[in-house]
Each structure stands twice: as C-alpha cells, then as structure tokens.
Image 1 (cartoon, each protein chain N blue to C red):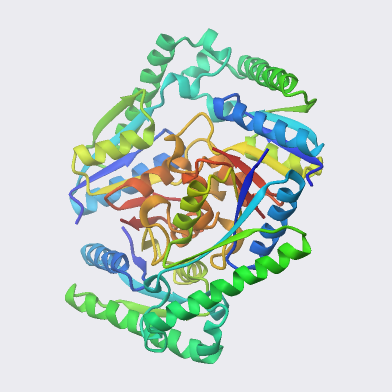
Image 2 (cartoon, one colour; image 1 turned 45 degrees about the horizontal axis):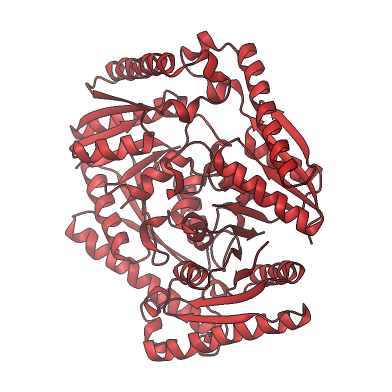
Length: 145
Length: 145
Length: 145
Length: 145
C-alpha cells in the first residue's frame, strides 16, 4: 500500500489529529513518513502598522522559530506513536504550494491533512489550503475532520 | 486502523480507481467494506421533453438497473482484488446525502471517493459531491485523484 | 457601467430569477444582453442502459429542442421585462466552458448566474458550474441566490 | 434596482477594485453604500511566539488602527468617485460572518467583494471568505476578479 505518507501540519488541534491519524496509518502499513509545515510570506500575514512591530527580518525569525516549534511538537507526538518521521520546514511559501511540491519531489503516495486551518468559519466550506491541495494533487488526499 | 471502509462509486473510471484503492487498503488492514452507489431523483436528471421518452416509472426502472450494473462491476473488481464488499444501492437520493447517511448508519470510519463525478470541467474545481461529503462528514474522507 | 451583460440559464427557477435580475439591471443601465444556455455532451448525461432509449442522435435532437425551449422561455421573460436579449445555444459543451468563452468572444463585462443548477444538495456548497465560472472568469460574476 | 450596496474590503488591491466597482454601480443606480471591514480575532492571526511581541491588547489596538486605515482609504477612493459611503468596522469577527450579519441588519440588497483576500494561491480556488459569503448569503453577491 502506501510507501511514503506526507502529513501537513500548521499546529492546530485538527493538525495534531491529522498527525496521529497519519502516524497510525503509516505504522500499520510500514510506510515512511514526512511531516511538513510551511509559514506564509511576510506580506501575506503582516498588514498595515503591524509591520512596525514586525519588520520582515523579525517576522522571518519568528516564523522560523514558530515552524520549528510545530515540527518539534510533531516529533513528540511521533514518539508517543512510536514512529520516526522526517520533517520539512518551508518559509515564505504558500502552504498548498509547499505541500504539493514536497509530495512530488519526495514521491509521496498519500497526503494527509486537516479540512481546515486556523482560519475561517470552520466547517461550512472546505478550507482554502485543503481545497487547493485536493484540486491540484496527483496523489490521493486524506482529509481529516 | 480502519474497521469499516465506505467506498462510493458512480461507475466512472475514477470511481473504479477509488474502488481498487479502497479494496487494497481494506484488505491490507483487514477492514470491512461497503460499496455504495446512488442514483439521483428523476427531477434532478430528466428535463424538458426528455420526460416524454423517460417518464418517472421508466426512469426508476432504468436507474435501478443502471445502479445494479455499477454494483455488479464493483463486485467483479472486488473478486480480482480478493475482497468481499457489502453493497448498498440508493435510488432517488442525492448521492452526497446517501453517502453521509450510510457512513453514519453503518459506523464507517473512512469514506473513499473520487474527486470528480461524470460531470464538470474535471480537475479545475473539486466536484460538488466530493465537496459536499468532505464538508459534512464526521469521519476522514480519502479523495482519489 | 456595464455595456454587455451575459446571463446563463439552465431553465431552473433560480435561473429565471437570474434572468429577471440581469434583465432589470441591463435595462436600468442601458446594457446589451446575451442569454446563454448550454447542454452537456451526451456522455456526461447518459449512462448505462439509458443509452438504449437515448442514443446519441436522439439525445442531440432532444437536447437541442430542450435548449431551444429554455431560450424561448428566456425571451418570454424578456418581453415582460421589456428587454431584447440576444440568445446563444451551445450543445455538447460543458456549460462553464461555454459561458467563459462566450463572455470573452462577445466582450461581456458582467456574467450573471444562479449559485446552483438543477443538481446537488442545493445551498450547502457553491454549485460546480458557478464555482468553475467564478474561479476562471476575468470579468465580475454576479451570483444570484 | 439596488437600494443599498454592501462592499467588503480588506485593503488589498482587489478590494480597492471592488470598492471602485461598487461605488460606480451605486452612483449609477442612486443606491446607498456601506463599506465594511473586519479584523479577525487575535487567536486566528497570532500564533506561537508572535504572541510575545503581539499580546492580545496590543493586537486589538493595531487591528483597530489597521481597520481604521482601510476605511480611511475607502473614503478617499469614495471621494474620487464622488460617493459618500457609510463605513462599518468589526473587530474580533470572522469577516464572512461580519459581512453576512451586516447585509442582513442593514437590509442590503447586494454584496460586492473580491474573489480572494490576501492569502492563498490567488486564482486557483475561490477564496474561503468569498466562498462562505456566497454559500450563505440570501442576497446576490457580485464577485470581483
């Protein structure tokens, strides 16, 4: 079955559910695991006067540190589930793009992710990242609810 | 892992890919399988003068026979994959509704389906059935591409 | 403001609402109107044994006649609203494609259409045709609810 | 035709296009205009250690000031277009919710907004805010591209 599962996380509770789900599936199937997190470009996040407090270089530093924290958490969850994932950290990249490129470059045969990120009216519409991934992926996408 | 996988098919090539994918996954995991197909209500399909050739009762007969053919094909594919699915046939039901209700009533813990049905500009947007299922499901949805 | 408004109809009640809405807007603004309807390719509609009763040439004839009826209805509604639309009928074309191409070839500066067609769980997700049009159009799209 | 047009802006170029479009339409039709901007709750924006630099009260202050700047810009554009909009500023609200509630409470008969906000892979899928508004609105939604 799956040989290499890519799990996307943005540090939300639903992402942690996706991690545990993907870990358990990979463990059962003996698949390799890559966990990915991506932080968006400064201009996508920082607006108006927030830029005074968060200049680009400060944002980069924090985004990097924030992403590292998310991956650290993913590793701790992995330890509990007795799996050993690779981790990939992207900065300044739209998450959907980063996920699709990584799935291709690493020949992953399944993408696992939550239906929603941190934003939006939760469950009423599919989150835009999941929507972008599922409409552009060439491999199956397992959407966690 | 999964105990009972629900696979939705509408008889398209992508559905057959979803069947094979779901069968293989279920077999690997020792999960039970239910295959579902649903044919839409007469009023959703038949328009205008087509109704002259296809009155409701004739449509029902054909839709039933068509759905039975789809499930028959699903069983043949199952035999090749050495699995034994249950099959469920709904008539006069919006497919997304039928899929969600069946997943709930049978306590399925995974839904497998193609990203698109027979209609639409294929891959540019998520098919409306998959979209409806993925935004309303309480269990994970594996979208086949 | 708008010089040429394209209104898409598939003969549903919501389409008639879109027609009336588009007509009134065009009349108020002195804009030209084109009404478009498209019937899908035979293979998108006709499945399984329905093909016995509806062979391609019979389907073409009925689809053409059905589309003509939809445009006839659009003209009657136009007369009530005291406007004089052009009408365009496409056969064997995915409706979203036909709408986008016509908007471009006729230099329409607004597309008016219902949020949903005949199918789907109505209002829970945006209909796939409207979704396709709104994500690919280069001009504004007025979605009628 | 329209008596009261609600235009949503988040300060992006596409929002400014939506403002100019909505202003021109309102002016032509003699409609009242309300411009709305909403800033998301702190927890939707601020993650991880960014919270060290941006504690809730600081975020509130900046978000308020940022929103005020967006509305100020909307008023300047209005002056150029010779219209006089009302403006509404929401804080700590999911934008789609704020837009829908305002449309209802003020009896607006049209919502104008861009297809995308600041985020996402731009035009590949409909932005999640526009998607939420268009699937839940009871009045027509004019999506600007």
